[in-house]
Length: 155
Image 1 (spheres, rainbow, N blue to C red):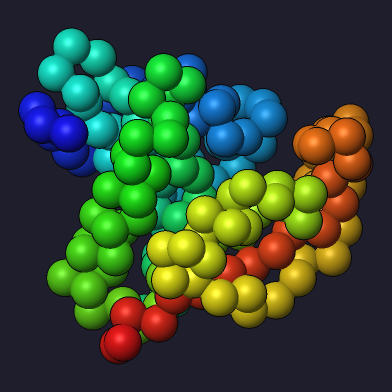
Image 2: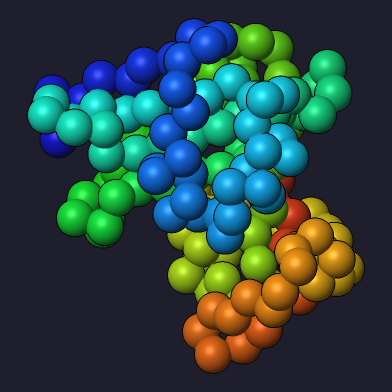
């Protein structure tokens, strides 16, 4: 795709909740991490089409806390463009590992991350039942555990 421009949000810029909510359930949940993240918006020429929030977990690990693409641009490689940008940013800033967490019921997401070089690293037991005030369902199943995937940037 052409005419794609990444913009790093500067402090004080309006948070693109409408995009972040495509990948997270509530503004309250987003607010738990967003103020400690570096947020990038991908503009497709006429509108913002995707968002990515990156959080430094340590001096060696950068985590993708939120990544989302608007529906009309899905299945066109935009997600992989975002992942590659996250890898580039992580390497430029000397991180050794890029991680991401998704629901154990997010079969498509897990497959997507694995296709982009991530491997399953662990499980955060009861993450979705402990961190959300109501049950969340995906693929007809209640989201409970978070699957953590990691990409080794030294490869």
